[in-house]
Length: 306
Image 1 (cartoon, rainbow, N blue to C red):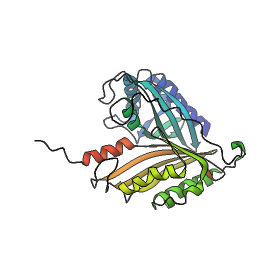
Image 2: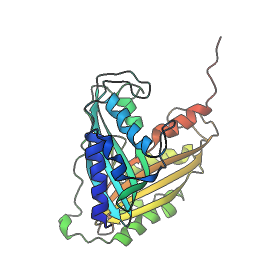
Image 3: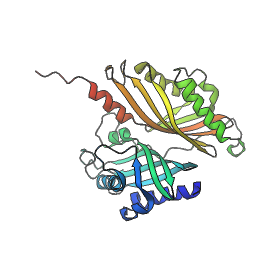
Image 4: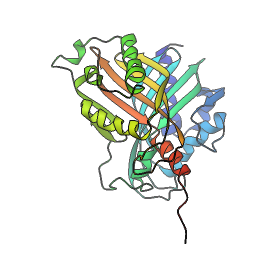
């Protein structure tokens, strides 16, 4: 199977199973030995889990529709960036219907073998989704739904089509970012790698330029002084790079108003970057922030009772 054929398998899954609600085609699209490395707690394994998750979303958001924003394929891996949209009209993981419209990003890595999906690693932006349906404070329910995200910038006046790109160089840039900048907790040279109008789309926000990136990441270093990131998989196609990563650290200082717990946390995420002319022009990220908050909250002491 080539990369384009592998993409076609994923497109069928989105259009026929998720958007169309047709679970009968699941055996055509997924291997009998399918493994979901991001299976929600309590979800069944294998093909039963594939069938359950779309049913769960369609039960909570009857008009749910996923739009494929981007696919990056290399070898047997297809990395995907999609936006889900729907109206919250049914129970969703214990949250009663709110009637609110919601939109959320979901990034995934899929391994395709013999024309069928054999493995999946995924990170949906459940924190932002839960905020939009009123389950978590912190988002104005009347604020506009933040997707679709606007088109990113060009670079230094040169038309984008004329900017060179090299997939291996682009992967090296992302490995350098993780190993030499993030893991050293020193982003001082990051500015050299960013285009003049760099924007990073994450958790429904646009983080702009070096200063915006630094203001977002340095509080993480302060809260988790030993945080380290590991690239689990990386693929590239054209001027796009997709990175599946996992971070570990100890909650030593306050984070988002939550006092230190000393708990060891693990956070998964998937990032896409557009890189041309050896410059990062635009990024899209989904870290599992809801999972991070759940790990911290589970370690907090119970409230005192009279």
